[in-house]
Image 1 (tube, rainbow, N blue to C red):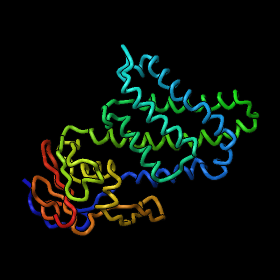
Image 2 (image 1 turned 120 degrees about the horizontal axis):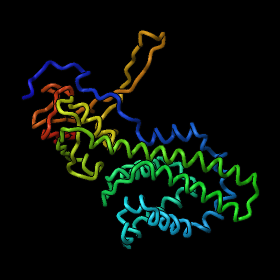
Image 3 (image 1 turned 135 degrees about the horizontal axis):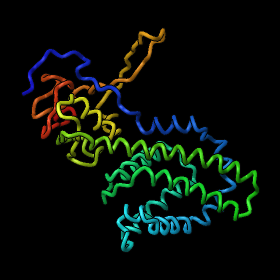
Image 4 (image 1 turned 60 degrees about the horizontal axis):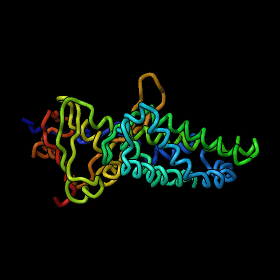
Amino acid sequence: MIQPTSLTPASLEIDDLMADPREEWQRMLRFCQVDDAALRATMPSVEPLLRRAPETVAGTYDYLSHFPETAAVLGWEQRVDAAHLEERRRFFAVWLSRTLAFDRSDEFALYLFKAGKYHAAHGPRQIHTPETWITGSIGLMLSAFATQMGEAGLSGPVIAAAMSAWSRYLSAQLHLMTFGYRIAVDLTRGAAELHCTTFGRLRPLVERTSLTICTEEGAPARSALRKFFNYFPAARAEALERVWRSDQPSHSSWVEVRPSYLPRYGWRVLLNGRELEYAGGFEAAVHNGDELSIFPPGR
């Protein structure tokens, strides 16, 4: 049973959230120097690559269906399911077209983040594609780009400049997909299963009414909420307010500033029907089978 306590503001804070995927994307683009100069370097290669895009899409899944381990991941050991193959090709064609357009938008960051979650078996078909094959596929795609540029007769310096840009850009993409994959895997890690229900305007943002969150038995409610808001960054922007906290480690003369998050005014979190603001805060322990509910203002 949760016992009422005298709460401090820190009792309702969530710290150590992962970066918003859009912020992480822009950070990686800056680090990898995926800028307008990189875009210009890719331009001579776009038309030759686009011309062979149908071949690239078909060839990719032909290869995956014949490589034993990826065929097993896709469930294609005996035969290729035509409807599933069509879905895969459609997804890949959209990704390839956006890649050749050198899409650097925040919306594309969310697209890549979601793709990573799908790789962790959180998509409609619930197929788990280990990181190994995603990383390898990016390498194969870069190899295909280089081969196709060479066969198109582009000069060595043009190919070198284009491949430099494509390599940096696809590395940033890989990071975002891996970012989403690991957050999705973390959502299902832990012995205690909590049933989390969302209400009101939160539901369209998370595209569901409920989900299961796994965490360690006896962990603070904060750990489950951290997983929820890492998994649903749009919900974080709606329900939480970012504040800044400062620490000065004993070994350093510098003050370190870190973000923390508080529920916005009117938002409520209930554990087994009891509002955590008055029943232990986010430090309250959670157990297998507990019910977590998140309400927007007015509910």
